[in-house]
Length: 261
Image (cartoon, helix red, strand yellow):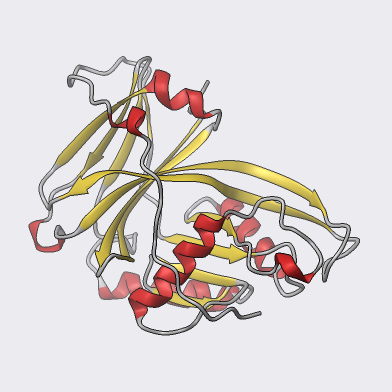
């Protein structure tokens, strides 16, 4: 299913998260994340009959654990008889901004965007795997297709985000903090998927720019007390290039579960 219009990327910055704490030693029981092989964003809709197979692909990717797979439900099919219960206009804006950055008009569901660079039909797992392999082979990051090392560490009081240095790719790059839910089970009563129960995994609920990365090793410390007020239990950090104000290549990523525990 295809929608053809363009909106600018506009995601709100929450001032409370911009508090920066002094760098202190972390407690011995701090939780530290690893580096995913790739980032796959699935733009999907409860009102799209072609989407459930793609939602199952995301379920598989999440279960396998190597790839950071995120579900971003869009709202432009709501007029077909069912209002998507998880959709956000910000997701639609992000998808259209990707198309604008690529200078194409490819906005459809289910659409998977790999590392912010390549888009494929989200239900075609082999195409997703091939795209990741091609990006990995083109880079020099070993077992990952992402060139930057990013870590997220949680201690009693703070969330510490560290981004490695690489001056040759550090221009016009944004650090994003993404909150997501593990799972949502939705009974769809109307529209193209009427009567279906669909399970959505790693559903993005909020996405906030928290700073810029300039190519040198960077560390940001955010107060855990403020982050826990969001009510979300999982977060990811994306370090993403910007192309003329639109999202471009994702250079690094990390995740952390149990944010509020």
